[in-house]
Image 1 (spheres, one colour):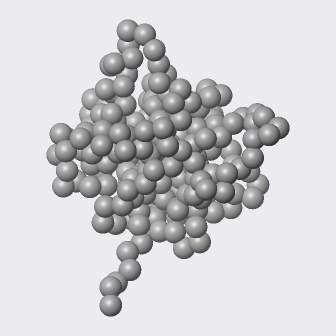
Image 2: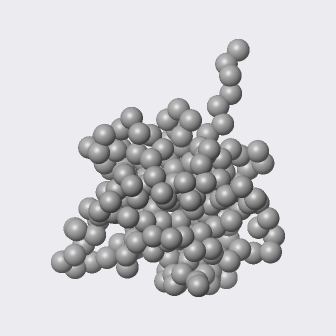
Length: 200
């Protein structure tokens, strides 16, 4: 069974592979890759994983958030040369998706992401609030010291700082937060592990 993913979301989910959310299914002829957009850190050789699998994460998340569940993840077909990662996504509702990049072989999480596809109309405010809530929920799974209010404030701060940016990152201890803001193409929050080095 395959997950049905809207075309406009597919380009946003390329953030999992390219390191930025600004991607196009059919790029114009003069659209060249920008050298100033960084490659996603978790794609680098030796990039760490969280010490939990996707199955473990989802089980813990759903217990902690009974009214805002994340359903089963479905694999997203990779290119033949994508040998290091497994990508998967879960549809939360029509404008909100969870996605992940996993270490092949172990299933451990390299990046956990929530993507909001902005809508307009009377439901816009409620949809945005739901997206913020899900993003805050995910942050708390990787930093349980944060309260509900603190995690929501963290999300809003990250979104404000990364507004309009293809790639904005902020490191807090052993966790990296990444924002990819592509306007109507989607807003993605990613949570990733950081390999800490011992200071001399």
